[in-house]
Length: 172
Image (tube, rainbow, N blue to C red):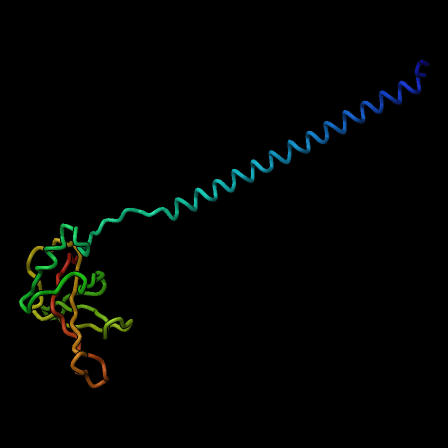
């Protein structure tokens, strides 16, 4: 066997270096692909986790007494004014501070002109409709009554609104 010349040895050495370089480049490329996939996987896991937290059902607590298990449910069911029973809290509406006040020694409240209407009107609360018992709900509430069932209406064709019960809150 003949010995390799200096040129041959240099060529083999160069070939070995190029082969090792190509292997290193390929290994680095694979490493980068795995690293990128992991980074993307972490992003997806984070995104899925955030979505899961946003859609996780939150346990609710009925502060208004609408739930039969609420401690205020029975109180609401037996609540009455001088006009009669208020029916239940399901018929009542929570009134914001800006939507009720006193005028000429009587309460008045802003309520919808008709059931499910966006238009509101000020209605004077009859003294007999005011609930004088302590307000356990801690919110101002009103129980409007609409006389549109019998076809009664005012001159403009709107149903006549009366107040069955009114439970004032604090005017602070």
